Image (tube, rainbow, N blue to C red; front, side):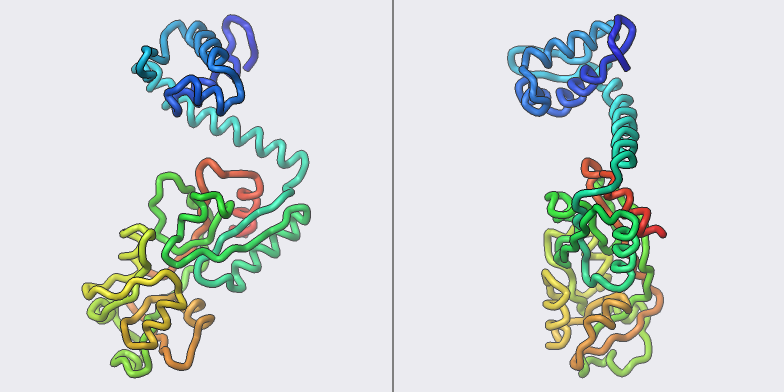
Length: 290
């Protein structure tokens, strides 16, 4: 996209996209490191090329015109796709390098470590760091930019997050104290588990996520970490659903793990923020898929 009366300038499109988000010429200029008057100039040029107004401006407010709303809806995915293509080509030209921070929830077990090994072998110039994510906050670290991506328990229904490869589909077990009536059982049904208090994640974990991991009709205690949950289990304060590998990893003498039939398997997935997708993230997703 180049200059000329019929062409479109990429800078004009970028200015419109930022202005559509900020609805303020000054803030849009700050984000793009140009003056407010330059934003106005770029918008006028774009509107001139299109032959119609995209923004209505008064002394009090800035808002999109109906055409501006439609133009934004069609332009955003096309621009994002173009930016991804450029970023990918740039990364391929210079290789994946820098630092990749991967969050994990629960246990950084052999499956995650194997994916990290594959990634490091393919991209030795990129340093990988792993960061534990609190049980009660599966998505916060990604949103705050503390990690580039995270391996979290499903479900994920966050509109600002991308869900990548799924892995680690495992049968659920219920952790109970040695003296709990379920402790002597070889297996349990979902209906039986629903009759006992289940330890659940505390806020800020979304309600739908908490309910998926504590599907009980009987209220149970809330915890921030898995260790807190297992401590309450050992004290007889409730039971706790855990996948088999996590149960094995956190095994302790005062807690019994009983398989549960009839509940969905535990599944881990890789998530990252829509605005934080980089070639490093995509490369790790490929390693995870492989």
